[in-house]
Length: 207
Image (spheres, rainbow, N blue to C red):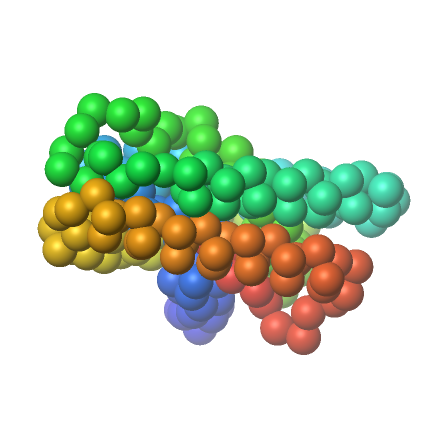
């Protein structure tokens, strides 16, 4: 029971705190509503859980032997976050009234986690803390618990966005909201770029 509580605390702290995936969930909820945003929530949760499982089953060993690959993942993640920030900044806010523009997808949610450097570090830190000996049962136990908590945490951000979206009925208000989210994503990308290659003192937010 003690190990389960510790796993749950780690998963919650990593998933509920602000991060690129949660910022996109917040924005998606505001623009498209909660139901449509659950595709992003599901994709991000599945994507991170797959990353967590692969890390526990030996992916971290490959990364340790290939620092150039780790650096490439970091740079790709930064580029992806900047691209998402650019798309948000250019949005005209027309979907605030319930338009039928492009909705969030499972694939995009999953891709965000695999291109999120914080998710990689959190996966390595989590598995290092709870399944360092490679115990397959512990790896699956941790991943299953993390899936449930991660889904609920990202969904909370999407719900908050949907709540805010009902108060941003005019395109001008939605544009301001989108640009604020774009600035947060760009700031996340800048932080990741500046801190790349440093080891954090505590587990970062995966979401």
